[in-house]
Image 1 (cartoon, rainbow, N blue to C red):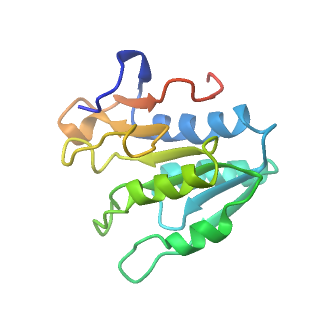
Image 2 (cartoon, rainbow, N blue to C red):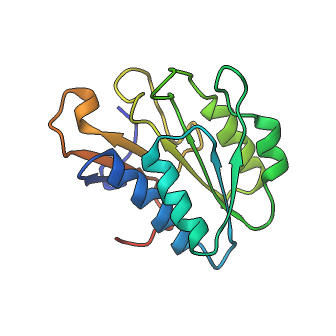
Length: 169
């Protein structure tokens, strides 16, 4: 469904583990390149908490504002990107209000700025309900939860684009 290689899928215990691993382990693995990470201000707690953890451990975190519909400000993203940025994380579909973020546009902005910045997408509310092609959308890491697609609780996976640097958990 993701048009990816099977080696790019890592099964996890669910969306929270996928998000934690994607965010914390990619930031740690890429810390030599920079110390700046960016996240939207309306993320699920399974994304917010890892960013708080990074902030407590010396990372510079930028929280992107959203408009009255919950859409991430792409202008704020463009302004926030700098030579220290190593990770950007934005959810695809908001779990509370249903806003669909323009992740393909965000991915292009990120990769046009610096192809080495890792782009993480929490697709837990979107997977199985809309087409998601990580490579076409410039997504390096994508989190999915099994129970959102009628699988058992305690299952999920993390798409890790080939050659994406992530520290094993």
